[in-house]
Image 1 (cartoon, rainbow, N blue to C red):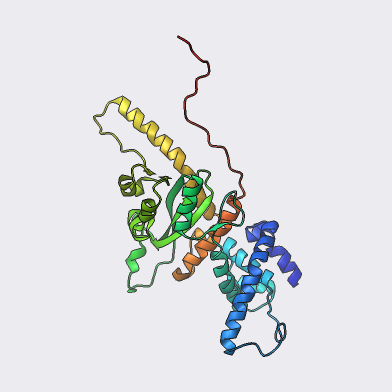
Image 2 (image 1 turned 30 degrees about the vertical axis):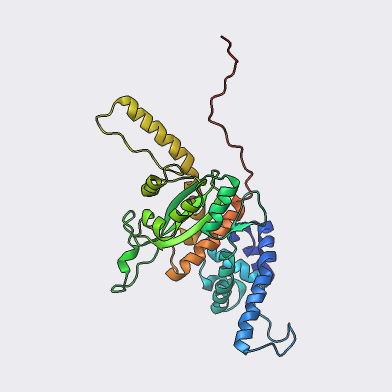
Length: 325
């Protein structure tokens, strides 16, 4: 098995999870960043400037393209480092080092903005500022990923036990637009923490204070946020009492259907992340989950941002014929 064969196999979209055109864009974007990062590490190890000209000395076993490919394949399919090392005929530690170097660069890219090439959102402040400037109605939802159970006796062992799934999970919050295109995904927290608690601790509520024109669609887990910002946040309507008339019950079902139809696109966004193996069930170290999730979400946002913007249909009633008295 040659290096050329391994590189051609890993660059296939079925293994890397991205198209070859997208792979070329990633390589062009990350090549200089990886070289600058490597030079910084070498400068720290040497304790000063380089003593030989650039390019001298031992050559790395994996080039930048190979390091990017093994990272993408690992993120897409969750292949073990040993299997990737056998594919490239290198030691397992070489692949592990390559993934540790490239994964932070992928995570730090931020999230692509639809119809705005070159602009990327990296913080919650960026998301709300973009939504306020462009008039985008946000969709907010949380998703859970199962993680490994900690050893017995470890402090905080119960903090990750989800009350919903009854498993050890990690939660993240996703922001999308009305077409389900990723704008931001992160705010990682233990599975035991409620969505409403995350709103208070991560500053999501503060962003609605700073951006009063931004509106959002949420599910019942954010009912407290909807009560605090009734003009900005829309949540499912409250169910009428059992003794309510049939008309009220039908109106509640219709209002709930409309709100669910407007919010369901963010569920599809979370489903896109679950197509990547590590976000189906994460078996790595918990301290690396945030970085892994942001790297995958950024790659998904690149693909979703390329979807053309659909024109929003109006719900206003328009007279077909002009009537005269």
